Amino acid sequence: MSAKRIDGKAFAADVRAQVATHVARLKEENGLTPGLAVVLVGEDPASQVYVKNKGIQTREVGMNSFEHKLDAATSEADLLALIARLNADPTVHGILVQLPLPGHLDSDLVINAIDPAKDVDGFHISNVGLLGTGQKAMVPCTPLGCLMMLRDHLGSLSGLDAVVVGRSNIVGKPMAQLLLAESCTVTIAHSRTKNLAEVCKRADILVAAVGRPEMIPGDWVKPGATVIDVGINRIERDGKTKLVGDVDFASAVEVAGAITPVPGGVGPMTIACLLANTLTACCRAHGLAEPE
Ligand code: NDP
Image (cartoon, rainbow, N blue to C red; front, side):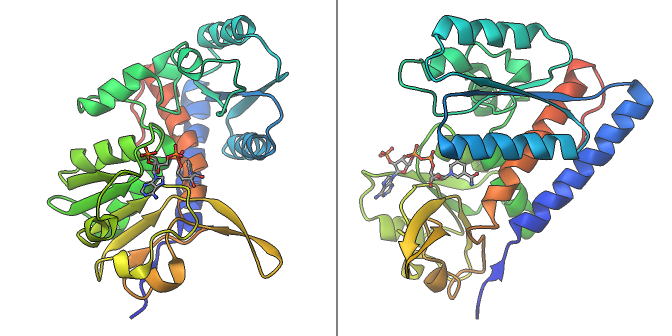
């Protein structure tokens, strides 16, 4: 039997609608408009598209969007000065520095200069530590979106075997922390993992965050498993450019219980969670009840 498709596009639209309702209420009852500042350094084409989409969706939910586009040659001192200004600006509740940064800029230094309370990407070392110790943190958007879809589909995740393939700081590691916090038994696999097929086959929940087109075939998937495909890979097929995930969808869909497609799965949830985090940051900054 073919797996259920988890519709990230519809789910994300739902999340955005809830955020918009909350934003309207904040304006009416508290005279507050959440604001998100996005900083882009250089002209990486993919980053330009992401930043544009973030701006559009931020405005659509009724928030203020502040876009700062800086020259590729911007110095670290100038970038840090901008971040200091945004940290001090009470109309800015969330700050996102679009990665990757040009090579002459130290990403860790720049990210750690953001006020952790405004770090809506959840990459600041304080938020990483808070998440790892089970304290109230800003949670990275992509893994947060994955978790929301898993909870919606499975309810309780307690006791399930979860395998996360990929150990990056932005996806794999925080995803594993979130699953651990849900009481899953978590395995993190990576490029040095032995017998990856066997490891994947154990998973009730399989999260693929690798960046290799269709690397995980259906026969690595446990029958009935829930598969979350984070990968976004651009390939040429039949003379056309196509987006595919890290999982071979055609074979995995025949084995899994549920699966996220690419596109239309994890991708749309990421920006929706960014907006949800900005709303949360605004509520926290003003001592107001946080959205559920
Ligand atoms: P990274 O390149 O930072 O990390 C990739 C990870 O995959 C590494 O831990 C690496 O292992 C592991 N890996 C590489 N090759 C293999 C292999 N053959 N077997 C097992 N593990 C392997 O990528 P990201 O985490 O940033 O992104 C992963 C994917 O998710 C990409 O396709 C990216 O485009 C996508 N993405 C999608 C987002 C969305 O919104 N949907 C957001 C962010 C990312 P090692 O550490 O040993 O090198």
